[in-house]
Image (cartoon, rainbow, N blue to C red; front, top):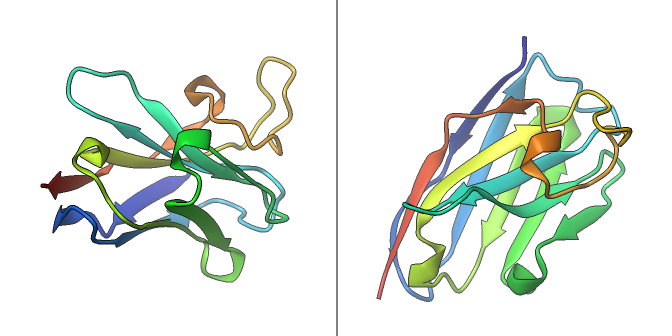
Length: 131
């Protein structure tokens, strides 16, 4: 059973930074399967932020490039999201997720931002940015 636990959220002022962590257990971080970060604001659909393959290849939502960076430490089974220059519109619940299997003929190594391709999800960590 895969378990994901996010941490690092909080309340910050606009322009500040946060680093989110996601500790994974029961998951083979040394596989090339992708891990990802997503967020969901009240009244909105969950959206993809960034994904990273086991070999380090990343896919970041274009509108967030330059401010958000995804990384993973396979030795620690941990996924990270560095968020800089935060804005009020970044306020949301942030989730990490992992892929462990092929879905829709798309292998688990694909660093996709499609929520439906992810197999396991964490409970989320809240990020609130005030102006």
